[in-house]
Amino acid sequence: MTDAVLSVHDLRVEFLTRRGALVAVDGVSFDVGQGEVLGVVGESGAGKSTTASAIIGLIEPPGRMAAGEIRLNGARIDNLAPEALRRIRGRHIGTVFQDPLTSLDPLYRIGAQLVETITAHTALSTAAARARAVSLLADLGIPAPEARIDDYPHQFSGGMRQRVVLALALAASPELLIVDEPTSALDVSVQAQIIAFLKRLCRQQRVAVLLITHDMGVIAETADRVAVMYAGRVVEHGPVRAVLKTPFHPYTRGLMGSIPRPDADVHRLVQIPGAMPRLADVPSGCAFHPRCPHAFARCLSERPNAASRGESEVACWLEDVPSAATEA
Image 1 (cartoon, rainbow, N blue to C red):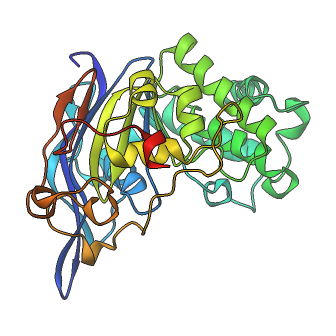
Image 2: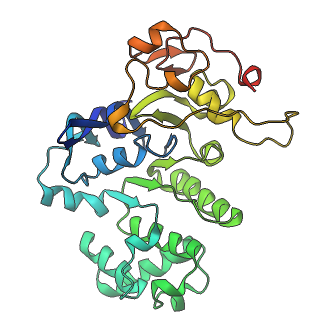
Image 3: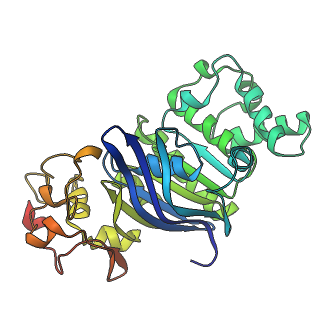
């Protein structure tokens, strides 16, 4: 993608231990274009949040980015000094972490936190920054924002705090927004509002969004493209409609088959046996082979590289995967 806002190429993240380097992210590549939502989906431990942390330079020792490149609007950022990268975070890259309470200081009113963020990254005066903060809260559906801006974080519900964190991430009008599990632990109506806001943000302001989630339903509603991660690697990547309608990788099929469908005449959801491997016990060959119902000898010894399958790219040795319905 030539006009990519974010470009990640062959990213590798390791954690150094006495037993050697444990690979948490292994050869991950993707682009996110202007006004596009790329969904990154997978079970806990797949490497989704670690990938996001590497992009914004928050991998702490003993972790390290061991290989790869990360570019923002064509300029490489993974080799910047910490102070230079700090200036990019907030101004050019907004981030929403999974737990909104970790992003809000409980001792300060949300207005003070929003104004501080805006004035730190823009040339706006304090009065203008406060007006922008009120406008952001209103855009995110917080009632009576002129009054609520002077409340403390504990005075907001979980869904409201999530919106405040979104306002913080968008305070300086970044070109890229990284959102980690934005709808987890929220009720369905609030989830719908957050999803609608993200879609409107992309459509109207052309912000690029990297959406990290384990919920395929959120991906279906929000994303333009989807990257499915397993054990630190992208196993399937393509347009969201193509991946959801015709998933190729057995893991993607398992994720799709585990979603309840009221119109489907099935008595039992598809189950993926086993669990995500620990970093110290990632199997040889295809990491998914111990859980795959279609694994054969080559899967146990050779790691597949991504290859084109229809509109998608899939890392799997199988030429044709039986439908999820036959696996139920």
